[in-house]
Image (cartoon, rainbow, N blue to C red; front, side, top):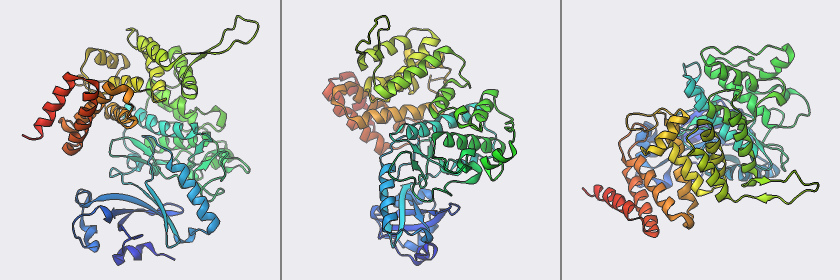
Length: 492
């Protein structure tokens, strides 16, 4: 069997091209995570045994730095297990979301399966445990993690993570909290129950009460309980029901512990997540709405209405209205994406705070169907725009701005970058003008001096050139002048 520590010391390349540098985590039940350098990306001659002397910045200059999750020898797979591992990896590989850490490669080396993942230098949210977080930071955390869970739970069939905890939520390079470690995830209703051990998967302290009941299938509500336990530990420094989690909650009928130092809304949300009855817990989508509204439960009727609209849009991509006045059922009248967009935009521009909230939620749901004008409108709200319309929207949504009318919180900048990036990746020729503007704005984040993103002039130049192609197609002379001015600055 392969001894990873001895192998790393030997100076050999793992599976022919990964130089193992140091372990990042050895606390997992079935696998260890190692920092590694992909030698296929290294252009200079280096001594593999000396790589450990470099810090993160030095490693970045050498080549691509990754995290490799290596399953321990005792978990070596037989033929059936190997195929199961491949099947489940394929499921996870197709999960694409800002708040999920996406594996980039899978293989089996000397009977030892491994996954290659992006390396997150900022580490996991374990570093937050016991720290003093303000309410906005807690809401941001809830929004990011709930968004990742909502995506997984909305898949067909849904994917249940089964091991949500601070160590499995990382802070990526774009300052998003992202869920990692799908090694024991279950695909509800899928071919396989889960990747490895169904009976013992997960970490006891974060396992919901129903996880300890015999014959209980994986359900999304168990992930919500685990998120509640995670939030509780981050804020108090300890897990809510001790090291046996939901088992203790069942056996002792323990009361929900208090959470000091946060708003009553956050405390109510955590208590709701930790409810002993799965049906009483909020869904991931409801947690997203609460995080956006900064309250739990959401007390405004407009937010309730918006949530209903969002749910309908996310499933159908359009809204169906039925005539109830007829004695017989009438055919559904389908409203086009363009009409839904126009209605939402009118609500956003209405000038009324309640209408704005409804319009934003509808527009956000429409953007999730990859309707590019809606994606851009969401980016226009959160992005670096000082236009009066964008400023007014931010003010009405309670988004704090600096003297240049740009969002103070990193969260909004990160959301805008993610939205601009999605427009670029969709590459839809029907919206050349929007593509040009979105990619131009994306370039600005990397070439304009700011406290959020590190300067990356090579990436900025690449975005400007790509934006120029779209601006030419759209015939946008004004934008072309801005782009050419920006490109000229690289030559000075």
